[in-house]
Length: 325
Ligand code: RIB
Ligand code: CA
Image 1 (cartoon, rainbow, N blue to C red):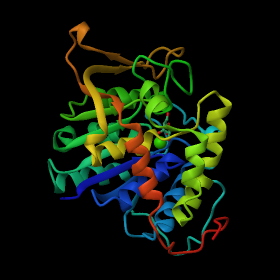
Image 2: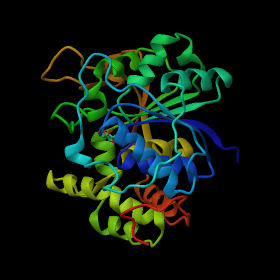
Image 3: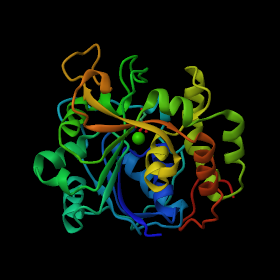
């Protein structure tokens, strides 16, 4: 099996960290770079979470971390710290000598896809600011991206940061619309509702099973997801939500997808009431589709992917303060 060359564009907190672990440790992935985008938590905290994740996997410094856009295109940054805490459960490590690339995340996206046109996939699991900036900076960017897998929006369903909008599309709706209009030949979308809420939410009993696997990765998972599952349950969600890792998982393991369809997807940018709302028009409306929206996945198989990942024995490169064992 030839590993899939992939870039993860991320607002690194909670399930973003699980996604990075999957990119590092799944044999189907060839993780070329991590590009950071303003989203879940403070930008510097996101960078710290990315290095922490690399460290727990025993891969510190092996994948370049590129700093991307520190704010949305047009809007002020909005946090999800109420949902995720600091995104890694208060864990920390000595970062002496640990550095990020001097190349901006947008430039890394442009360069890596230009070096290997038609070969590199991008998994975008935060606001789409970096992706949109790459599209604007180089009109030929979209055409040389093999596939763009996006976590964002809801398919005629509930939002999460507002009743209308999912967080990634809400934070930077203009960027999301630029991406929808950019002409990516293979744009796939993993949504919040119904897909994540039905097929990528791990109930407390199975979440506890993952946390108790006895590996450094399982201990890390328990700490970084703790704040989010508590928040999720407080708002009526039945467990720990994992839309980001699902987005990479379906790239690496396409057999997980049980249903998808072509839609015309657009994002509300003018209304404050419905800012970030994803309008996903199915075939009935006769619009030209721009995306494949994932409608159902094999939830038990996805859980097994995560369980297999977290059961992997790794040796952190550096001690992690707060991580048992
Ligand atoms: O709405 C869920 C998305 O917003 C996930 O990517 C989560 O990490 C946050 O970025
Ligand atoms: Ca994310």
